[in-house]
Length: 150
Length: 164
Image (cartoon, rainbow over all chains, first blue to last red; front, side, top):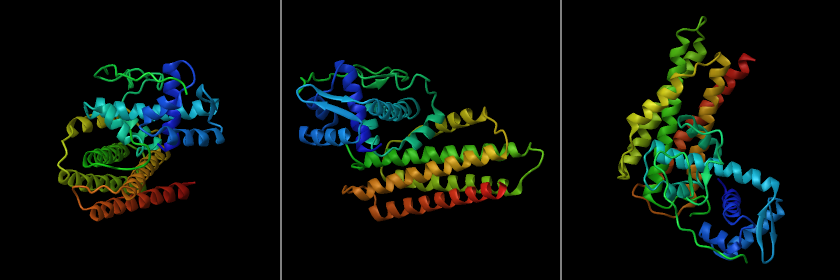
């Protein structure tokens, strides 16, 4: 999954959690990057027609951005389920985040052939717990810092 | 969260190699399953039979090479007996419709494996991390495996083209 896909996925989830535009601060925090880096990437996403940024409000995905984000989320969901349900990795969230940049959607699809994926994927993904709801071990809630819109 | 294509720890590397092992397991199981299913086919195609036999043997060899690398990284073991059973169970229930089905599936498997190794090699080359295994030997091994996957893709594509 490339960097742009990681960003649109994070924006998509933040929009769901905030029920509105994703703030740059929250996005930077979620991705572990500086606000300056997040701003730079938001500019690139805007120029590619994947997102729109409104000053003091935050960033919103376009329809094309939403499609990209859902594809990326599906790939991420497969990685999480594979780690948790097949390899029984306890720290599946942290490991999925580490592996996400190196696992391509083609590879994820092949891994998906040995897990039972729900047709509703990626709507099975809960942004609050940062986990798929079809894990064999239910994910506990993670604390997420509330960020105000920039 | 890491943003970008990098491998930054032995643990992450071991996990990626384990995923490679699972992909090889899938290719091996799938090839073997198809190979077995050819026994019942009315007309045995020697070319496809040979292709599947070779693919299964090659994947087994790749898996062993990856396992040897993981062993050197002192990583926790993963339940491969369960994975093998899972792969067999998933593929045991699906029968290929015809030879074209088998070839197409084989092509997808080889292409996916190629893409996986290509991305992994790229991520390793972009990383400045010192791993608990010699970097050159690691990358050389992965490059050799990737090239064999590329040859596999070419071989399947050639048979598919010849059959058209």
